[in-house]
Image (cartoon, rainbow, N blue to C red; front, side):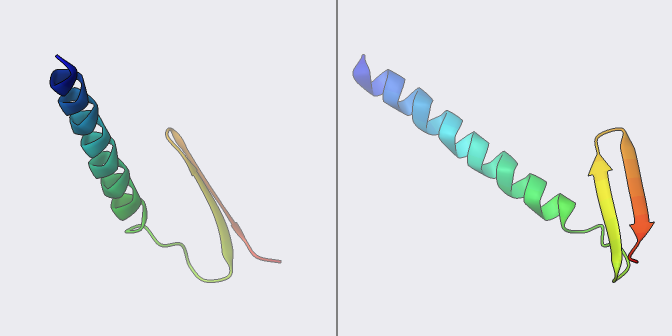
Amino acid sequence: MDWLYRGFETSLLGLALCLGLAACLTLGTDRSPSGALAITLPMLTVTAPAP
């Protein structure tokens, strides 16, 4: 029975790793112009030029 729990835990850790990697890769595709400050939230994007 212990192997079942270890397999389940390992699969969840693998899924979390894949989702985290996918999130990092998709966030890296949208680049802001150089010298600008950009903050992106799930429903809101704010961009301000650098002083």
